[in-house]
Length: 169
Image (cartoon, rainbow, N blue to C red; front, side, top):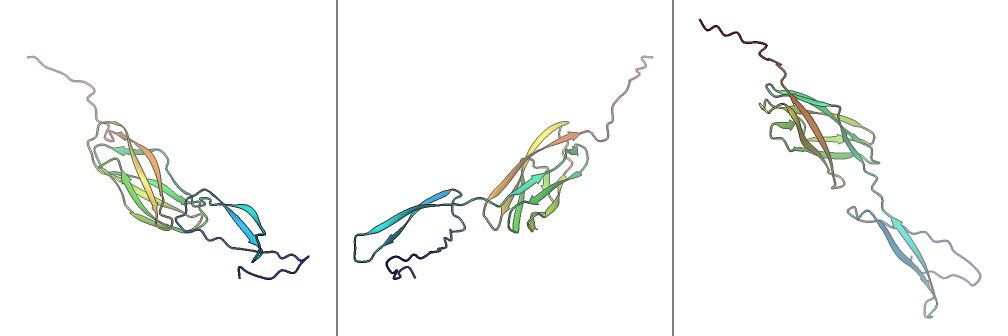
């Protein structure tokens, strides 16, 4: 009850609960708590603050990624939930039209890690390094975690011409 009778010389400890919206911005909110005596002009004010922190952390990582230009290959990335709550993640890959994820979603408990396979199709791409991004969209918190990756494309057959003999007879 927001109103109560307090006898002169007594005190009363109050507790209150603040429940921010799920989509509240991550920042510090300042507000005033006012206690007033009814039917008088007397009041007292206390300035308070509430800090909303982002405690949901998703990490996406891998070792060195390698693909073959002349055949399909695959590699593994890891997605880890370092947050304080379980989360469902929608996964997507952008940046390379010849790469895709085998899984498009994962559900992770707090502290859990999932391995996700990246498939690299035969591309005939020149040997070199190519960048792409993997995005994990939180179904619970509506935020994206984006990680940039590089894949080294190489000639896996490693066929080369060592020498050429020409006979001019």
